[in-house]
Amino acid sequence: MRILKFAHLDYLKTSRMNYMLLLFPILAAVMLLASADGSALFAVGYCLFAGIVLAAFPYNLTSESERGFLQMLPARPGEAVLGHFLYGLCMVLASFAVGMLAVVICHLVQPALTILRVDGTDVSGLYLALIGVALLFTGLQSLLMTALRLENIHLVQIIRIVPAFVFFFGFNKGLDMTEAMPDFGIGPGLAALGACLGIYGLLALISRAITIRRGE
Image 1 (cartoon, rainbow, N blue to C red):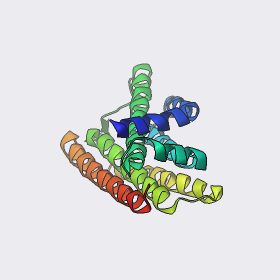
Image 2: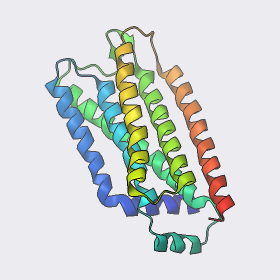
Image 3: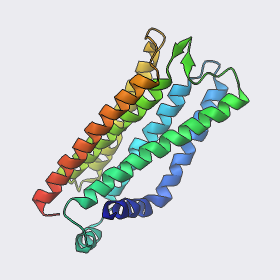
Image 4: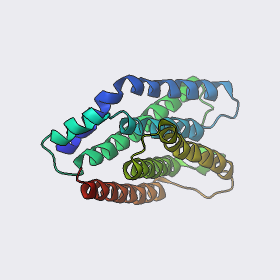
């Protein structure tokens, strides 16, 4: 319950910025409808890219005075950083949800747009795998933010942006391989998502151990 409260605090701190998440599905929908060969996978991945970026905002929005206040709250050491990871998980899931919503709306407007198949290949599981990969980048980003605790705003911006862009360009390049790949259905997608969730949890525990060692 305390971890949920810390995640809620992150949401309150970033509530104004989170409206930016609504801009990305709109842009994704415009790109899908404007392109004759638009990819639903690209649109969802584009929104996940935004989720990774937004998940890092709570780290450098916490001032020294707020950090002192948070340490006075009735919580065990490390629960605050677990709240960050929970918030990151929620942001990734929210970005996926708005991305899928944009794709479904585009499909209703343009029925020729395929969602679960690409040139006859089943790609339904790739959506789940995309969520998992986005979580890996979010977790790595959060671990770096926790371990380094950078005060230099330029370095913070780099850590916030680089993982998201590596994800974006990586999955964008991977889209070119979907035509040659075998079917990737729900089963493999769930397995990939489960593995990534496990690694994400491990990264959260490592970050918690770091903060406990610091006495935070």
